[in-house]
Structures are given as structure tokens and as C-alpha cells.
Length: 199
Image (cartoon, rainbow, N blue to C red; front, side):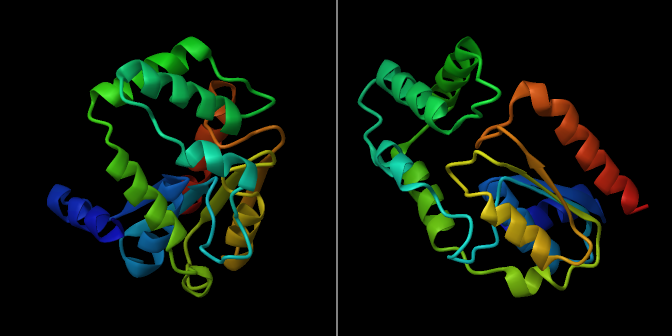
């Protein structure tokens, strides 16, 4: 996926990109930036981890829900999605249930398949430890992580920031494994500030 991102930049004739990734996207960004250092101007890693097994683990209490069947109908899928959203979302910034429901319906209608979710989980579980590669980065980096993240323990964000010289860590109290609308301003200002440090 990191190589695909490089290929997309080539196709679009974009030499440098400010790379931002959320969750598994953060893992892809952390893979892309060291491997294609000539194409990454800055990086912001959000609710992610380094791949080291001793950090960024998933709370065991959420595993049964993640591995449960999504059912056989559109409504079954949406009901499970809402339950999982409630399980991993930010305690201090509760999700809007109607928006969550609309997003779940849209996700299902756009082509959700169980095998894709399985491949996603396997990619996360089998990732390599990027700590050594991250130490080679010489670009501005910011790391954002919620203190109440049950999908990727906050130690993953801390380890990411510790691995990268000069990286800034923003830990947000009460944030879980989602992107609450109330925090959009914080996300945007952090990404913009990180990009500006590159210039």
C-alpha cells in the first residue's frame, strides 16, 4: 500500500506530499515516509503504532466484537457497526448516532465485504516493527493519539513519537479510536503546523 501511494504520486506528477494516516493508514504512512524519503515532506500519524508487539496493543475486551459475524443483511451490518462504534469511540466526545448510522449504510452500499475486513486485520496483525526505520526520518512529524483508545493502546503513539527525532506528540484526553467532529480543529491545526515546519 505504501508503494501504491508512491505510484499514485508518480501518476499525478506530485514530487512531495505531506503524509497523513489514521490507524492502519498511520502504519502505511510510517512505512511510506522512510521507504520513500524523497517524496515525504512531513508526516502526521494518528491513533497508530510502530508495529512493535509490546506497544499499541488492542484491548482484549474488543476482540469478540471485532471478530463477530456482521450478519446476513444490510440492517444486520449496520446494527453491528453501531455497536462497534460505541465500543471504540471517544468517551469524552460521543458519536452522533444518526451520522454513524448513515455512514454504516453508505459503507455497506459501497461494497463492504467480510474478506476485506479480514485482510485489513491480518495486515495490521502481521506488520513489521518500523522503529528502526522511523529513526531515520528527517522530516517534521507529529503524532496524535487519544488517551482512551482501546483499539490501539496509547503506548503505540508514544512509541512512534519516541522513535522519530524531533517528533511532536499530542495526546488528547477522552479521545478513543475515532475522529470526533469536536476535535477537527485540533487535527487540522496539528497537520497544518507540521506541514508548515517543512517549509
